[in-house]
Figure 1 (tube, rainbow over the protein chains, first blue to last red):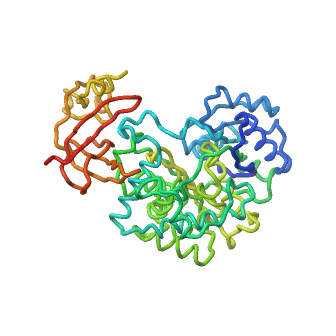
Figure 2: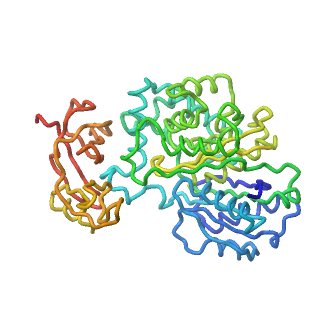
Figure 3: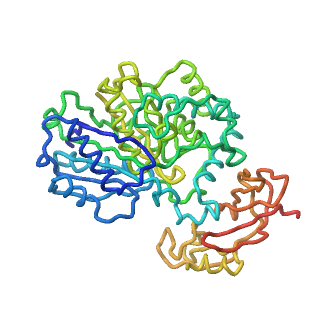
Length: 368
Length: 107
């Protein structure tokens, strides 16, 4: 299997802009070309788009509008984890030898049809994501004694981290008290416990080992990949543990011959505050039931190790772009190029991205 | 409209079961997830068990489990919910989405 590196990336400003999805994608592609040395359209073998937008034939459209005539082009839709799923597809094309260079661009509009999984009849009439998130939250509180204050620390930390991310949707500092007193959505969920859908795009450039150095002196290697789908319906799964993440993380650590203790920086899918706690626990970064303490410690020591760009809660959640933006951030961190939000000399990073009430997860390990 | 949805519209909560494998198929499907054979439809057995609950705007919603395998979300008609309590289906219907209301068995 050929080694695969991330050799370029770009993020656009996450916003409420009402713009065509292909325009959003081209903005990220243009920026990636501007920021990547020696990259020409003819270098690109694969163009993958990741979005839940209903527009058809997007990857060929984006290819044409970018002056690229790739061997392979198609869209990847898998709700909130479309981005990492597209990245894994691109990895596979390169690792197998079918291609050497792949451009992956993810984007979403604020009004994406991917926000609610209408298919899932097991949710009854409670199909909006706040309802499964509420169930996770209540069950985590019940089993581990997790408090509203611990949940609020997730939001306070990630909003604060987003202040140093110029592309964040709504960078604003909130105190723990303000978060705990924000609008009550359910008995167990406040408005500031939630990430928000928005418009945005991100792109990454993947390349084989033989060509990676053409585009950057600091390629970041994808050394571990784990993916798992446990179901599509929410109610089948345990409410206090994300089995899909647990399995995906185990696979990714095994493939990369690393372990949770070696993770210096991580982007994890904090769609809701409870998700960050559960993912920290199910990746093994925190002990089960102890993530609340870890997050409040990170907040109180201004440690940006977890979700340095602000996570989904701080940076916004344009579904198809989220996974790509997470990968871009960890790459930037491992290259030491994250500016004010740079963590201290990271060598190994983790990306965790998931869909539909955590019924499927992707975990990636990146190394400098 | 699926059989599941059509039956709900008539106020019946039916589930799919594979006659060959003797397994309940949930979420509802016309195909068995084990042998891909056609399923049959039958009324769910009550009572169910309350798995978890919360509330929004004073109205309680929950996950209830039936026959040790079917978990579904619905409204809960009680002021004193308790995880593990037995619940019955007090009403069900379909209007764009399945709609269930559960209540404690003793009521």
